[in-house]
Every structure is written in C-alpha cells, then in structure tokens.
Length: 469
Image (cartoon, rainbow, N blue to C red; front, side, top):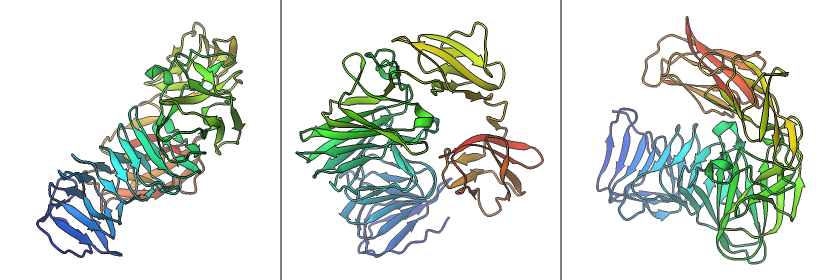
C-alpha cells in the first residue's frame, strides 16, 4: 500500500478509499470533500469520482495519475473556483461523464489526453505539454481572451476532435493547435473578431494528407500548382455573426515555401483572394492573414504554391517505403543520381542515403523535392529496440527526456549517449534505477533538430531517433 500525501479540510466524508492497483494507487471518492482556499491536495495515483462523489474546490488538486469522473449527475465540483494540476506522465481525462474544470494546468511530462468531452470555465494552462483531444471536444466556456496560456505546449486533434472557444469582444482569439505526429509541432490559428464580436468558434487541426479525407490535393484551381499534403485546418462559427480576420501559420523550412492561402470549395482547392502574407525564417512561423473572411461550415484551409521552388519537402516515409506527397509524373534520385525505372509515386529504397524526387503536377509545374535522408527502421540507426520494456518519451522532446523501464528491475548502471544528426556525441551519462523505474535526462540547451539516443551496458539495449522541438 502506497502512502498518499495530502493537505485537506473536510466537512463531510461519506466514503474515501485508497485502493492499491498494479501500477498506481487509486483515490476513490464517493463522498463530499471541501478544499479550502490556499490548500493543496496531493494524489499520488489515479483519481476516480464515483456516482455520488463531489468536491467543493477552492484550492489546488495535484494528480499524478489519470482523472476519471463517473458521477451520474455529470459533475465533480459543486464549488468550482480551484485548480487541478496534472503532474504525472501520459495522463488521461475520462470516465462515463464529462468533467467541468475551473482552472486546469498541464505539468509533469508526457502527453495529456482526453478520453471524453471536457469543459473548462476558467484558465487552461498548457505550459509545455501537448493536450491531445483525440476525437473529443475541448470547450473553453469562459469568454476570456487569456483563457488559454502556454509556453511551448499545444492542442492536437484527430478527425472529429475540436477546440471550442466563446468570444465576447473584438480581439484576437488564439487557437494553439499543433501535433507531435511526424514531429510537426506548433501550428496555431488566430481568429480576430470584428463588428459583432460575441460568438462561438470551433477549430481542428488535421495532421494528415487532405486527400485521405476527401479533399483531393490534385484538384485545384489555377494558378495553384502544389497544395500542402501534410496538414490542414478546419474553422467554423456556430454562434454569432459577422466577418472575421483569420491568421494561420506554417513553418517555411519544414512545411514548404508557400505563396498562396487556399480553401476547399465544392470540389477543388481555390485561392483566398483577400489576404496578406508574412514570411519569417524558420524556426519562426510564417502566416497568412485573411481579411473580412466569412467562415463556412466549416472552412477547410491549408497552403499552396503557384510555382514550387526546388527543395520543397514533399517526401514522407512509411514502413521503409518513400512516397511523394503529390504529383502526376515522378523520377526518383539517390544521392543526386537518377534511379532507373523509379517513376512511380512511391519508391522502396535498397540502401540508406539521400533520396529526392522530381515531380510534375497539374498546371504544368515541375520541380525537384528536398532531399530526404533515409535509414532503415529496425535495422539501422533509425530504431533498434532489443529491449521493448524500455520507453523513451516524450518524442518530440523539449527540455527533458525520460527513460522508463516499466516493471522490470535493473540493478546495474546503464550508459546513455545522445548524438546529433551528424553523428557527433553531444551528451553522455550513466543512469541507474535503484530508487525507481524512471530517470530523467536534461536536454534543455539542445538546439532543435534530429538526435539519436543509445542506452546500453555490455550489450546494445535500445537505439532510437528523437526530435527536439
């Protein structure tokens, strides 16, 4: 039985149980709890709110495990002026009923996920964490321009996931979208309300090829030559009226050298005419501003180019096969040399090295892609994992990396080495797990880019590719 440390003022408790579980203890609430202003409650494990459980919260709850609400009245908090801090690793918010938080702060490490629609009436503090809504809705109920704060964190969504914000004034409302998938990172959208400012807006960020969900990037209006194949935004106004100004962002180096904002109409991508373009060198984000833009139901937005320059990054990899993001005709190259008969949209490499593809697209455009450095997954430096019980997260990382050996007992020290993309050793230290199953390595001074991590003793244990945002 683990001991849970907490400071709490309790008026009435019907039943509070601390139940041991295989991985973490459980704080099981089926009574009434009062947390006074300034008080802190530390829950070292999961929090589960039962059918009759409820909390009058003026203070702060620090939770290291998952949060689960099963209250049949669809509430946890009877007084909702306090804060919940998620301080653990890879935590989830779920249960059979929605939780309405006041202030929610994402801390610790790992990704925080929504397994159910979730509401926030106060402030969402993303800090440096990813909040993955998956296919659920995250609703910021209060119309406060500062209701979402962040340092480097962001909100990711899947196909049906949404970030919903209410507005009440003429201002710029941030939707801090992004995704760790394919190491993309932060890609925000800002809606500036003008005129009649009160309203409700829904935004999602889809980190996938628009073609895969019916928005064919080969179907476009001239002078569009190439449409972004990596991701797109959706934006919709569900309450209120009036035009808006809208900004949405991309990374010049990682995403492509775009020159046109584009939206999906009935059957093709078309240019958004009334716009301006601000270009910033990577890692700063570039963006388009759409003036007096009327949101559709919803608007489907991404980026395009009328004359792609050589070096546009359109190659992606899946299961050791390279694919061109788009094009009508193709010619693949290896280390600058043409590969005979490699003229399809995909190519299966026979060796590691730099690959590029020369493509032509509709509209009589043609260009050479950026080089893609290929290494074999599972056999080269890309990803060797002889000990699957070892987890390394988060990936991409920001200021630290956690080495987690799960339930396995390791009594001897392991050597950890980090290499940059050129193979130079940039950090080395010995790690041991005598006092727990996790060790954290500081990497806050690393520059953004590709790294490789090796962990071993007298034999290779694990060798993985990591991305620093």
